Length: 208
Image (cartoon, rainbow, N blue to C red; front, side, top):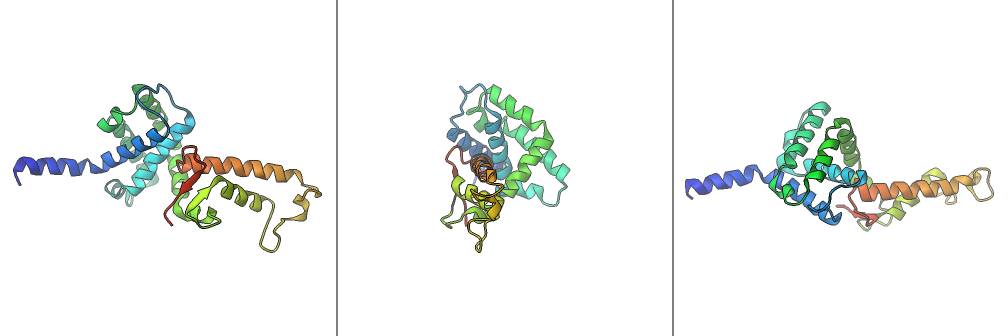
């Protein structure tokens, strides 16, 4: 192997983690129909993108190794630096407009927000998804999450499948039935579509 070829190989390997992360963001923005012609994105989509960056940081070994044995403040600073560097990656430059990149950068400047998103993404792990997967088919849906929220709010158990008597249609707290269903649907949609980047599909597939 020539010296020039070796140099090229080393350069590719050194940028491999960053390029993998950039490609993940491109794949997500494709699902969200975001491209260079998009001038602005919603807060929801911005959270999705930052959330996907956090997931990539945890899952891409070349990057994840940088976060071993560091403090939360150091982690927040590193993720911020990764986001800033990512926004000038050639893969991203070909996909996102200047306006979108500036918008993501502005949100990334709020390191507390980025840290909270990261904590939520870490929490929405496969172990949590397994708990929500009531029929154990490897896919968590909004309906499954909503059913779990309703069961929790109405104190439903195996021995009390209808829940506490006060929450039934003739009970003193019957209004809680409608409230719990609304809460369950809202949380289910936020969990699947934002935290887990379901992109409007209202479901998420996970590795069991």
